[in-house]
Length: 475
Image (cartoon, rainbow, N blue to C red; front, top):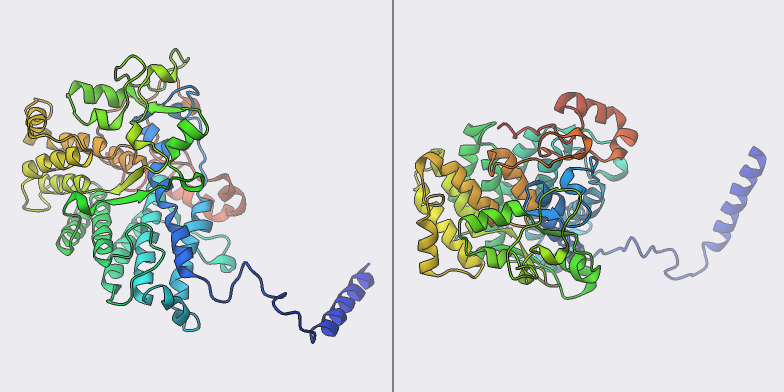
């Protein structure tokens, strides 16, 4: 058998040698590995994951902005293990590739056809850090420093979340400083290559990340927050960072896909969310939810089983939010104002928390297109809404929960950090959970293909369960 294999290899070698002198043009050039990769197309592809990063329905279910309509499972915490592998092999890998192409002397000149090398690298670093924060907030300790190495390392270690956060702060700061006055970056479907807007986006992400440290490392959180604020963050709704879906099937809004394309209507606005907005006479309710078939706002009963209603009987997400090309908010001015209000209340800045809180509500109403001076003043006059120094942290958190509607990852992270709103866990949950999930469990591939590192992270961080808390979750 060995002789046959050896002879076959020799024959193959002879055939290759015999044909190597012939001119076969581009037959030996792989179309999947072009000599001059188009960094603009790679960047566009990497940015198409921004929408899914924001609109993931699972965290929005956990934080009870949404509820299941028919199959009452995910609101009862049925799924334990969630996959993150496609984030590494997809957008993160592509962003790292952009950085390498703009850094390597052999490719940087060709890459510069799509914008200055520094600007492409800076945008890739900001967006890569955005994705990594999203991942670590959901899973906790994750592969980071040894990730994205390709064939050099198929079994990366899990970095501590604290170390990841420290590096994210560095990445955002260094990326902002890296921008130059060179040609505009092409392929940027998020901010159009606008350097000023990218800097504000990065500084705003840094500010929000700093507030995550409010309980676990307030000294560092305060320092990072103040530095980000000084460097320049979003200053109006015109600065809002928005991902825009398209009026075409390959990049359509997820709720449109569920409600219209698939005709399923699996998710509606939860009664937890609707009832709170009704209780406080919130004019934003009409911009966030539709009335049911009877002309009323009725949230779907959260995690109640068996089902005793239809999709027509409950409030779906507002029609304006679920068109095929509806935009989704990534980071907004009201969100930044609320972060500043909380920081001021914590004594991290000398700003006025009451003014920032009220300004955030006004900006939010304007963002959703429901602002009138009369409605605004009437809303602020209510006992539950009128700023109270004693209840400020809770009030700010409640407004953030509204502002972050359908930005589930961020809303869930802020609920875990602050404890507000006070959510009642699902009744009759799967997996014997007694509380709302605190993290996602790792994909099953880690326990089988990266066992040594998986065992190490579980022994350090805690059991690989939905109930284990991440580093900054210290209520």
